Image (cartoon, rainbow, N blue to C red; front, side, top):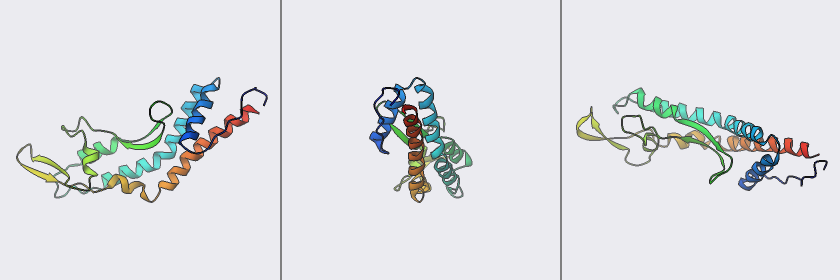
Length: 169
């Protein structure tokens, strides 16, 4: 241990991520290392985000009155998100709200619902009708490959941990 720092004890868990972030902060170039770790974790989740985008774009529009505007706006708001510190630490793919979509800020959430769908006016006028989206489009995008994305994020964490451990030697 040439640097006089304690050895880094990291595990691939939520606590392991917190320990990794603390170890990065102790480094001289910690800010750059954090950026690199976050980038690598986001890159690991990008295929899942692409799959979710593909799933919402495959939602049928015939008979529901929805144009491509709804689906494409929701698809644009699906992104991998990584936070290293603060109240929440971790990596996830998130469908952000769509505030500019004709007053339909919760479009990603409503189109993914199992029950009921959402209520809308017919061409902006009465009568009200209920529309139903492609149920569970977001959740189903991750069902089969969840272990792959989980492993890819863990590999990004372990790679950074190995890099920090090699510095401590």
